[in-house]
Length: 200
Image (cartoon, rainbow, N blue to C red):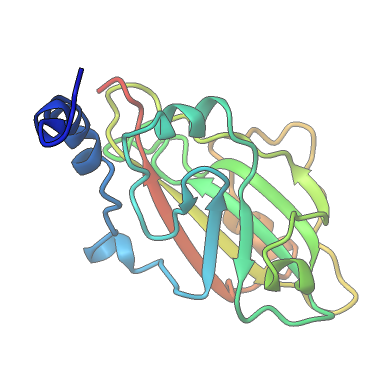
């Protein structure tokens, strides 16, 4: 039984036990070339871990496991979204199956068109038209960190991107061809986050 002033001695084992988790859960920001795609205006928000834009998803509290097995699509917030405008959201992995051998890039994780600007401005659940349902980031074991790129395009008023054909695989997706056929041009804003398999 612990009584004052011995409470510090009794708490010491708990403090020692929790220290590794504290340091392991540091939110590391992307740097160098990996930060080039980042923007302070675009936020990718998962309910438990928060905004992962331009960050490594930390390996603590089962975040990596939940990202690949549990969590649904994130909230997307774009600070400069225009009310009345429609947007197309693309989320891809350019590192499939690995960054050193990306023969299946761009692996399509999410594709939604006709997203109202108001939903993005306020970070609400995206409605729009889902052309490719959300697929959780699930990098294979022993392939290191994968980049998950989120690209947002403003649609030309009165137009909507073309639907995907049934035979278009999620892997080795020709994203450039889709963008050209849909007249989407360049993204208005981009970001990315990085995650890995817990088995390395």
